[in-house]
Image (tube, rainbow, N blue to C red; front, side, top):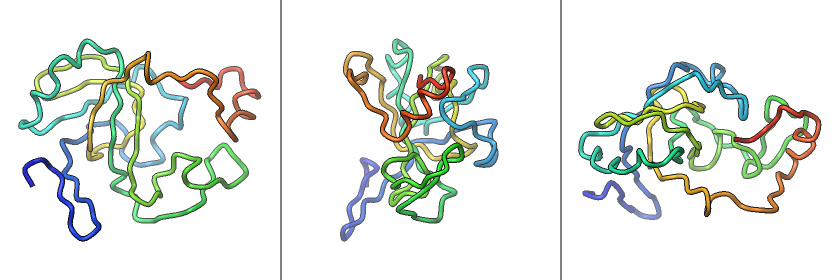
Length: 164
């Protein structure tokens, strides 16, 4: 499995490319989107063999990190965000208790040093395995006429409730 991916009888095996070093130790410590503290910094430490892949990422202001919710051992088809009274389907929320436990975060890049990507907009706990990193591209990743489904009522209620 030189490329980090192996397929074995309908299973996909993905090797982490690194880990997150975050000040958040438990799931309860992590601020819920979009209430990130811009002053909190974490870093993604890539395995040395992947450090060359960070070349030119420092020209981007933001990146997308795909990660594994390694502490989630459950799978639910419904969930209730902490600020919501109603349950929603797992694919309409960002709960870690999903079928493949894959998370996605858009982070603000602070700097890159060797195999370390320092960032803010942290919503991952310490030692979270990283699956992949992609540049956030303004002109293709931002979409017009976006609807936020069940979240619209919360967005309208709170002027300070903004997605970044």
